[in-house]
Image (tube, rainbow, N blue to C red):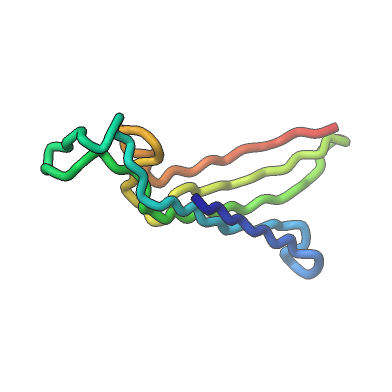
Length: 105
């Protein structure tokens, strides 16, 4: 497995304070069967997961209201809507997004 995520925070201009991020998750093929003699329905040996590349992205912005520091973040996971198994027999989540606020004081 290989995971990589990079963020860039704008420090001047109209976008000052915004942070943009892009990430990638990669996994090579792995046998999830109990042993190599377990046969999958297509006749190949074992049940394999992995061999996928998934991209994620996010945008965030810090702001303040009545003395409270808030960071709003919008995140999209699995940008390309890849169908893959991440260590189980159930498909991993399709493209999804999250909008969150974090309060700090």
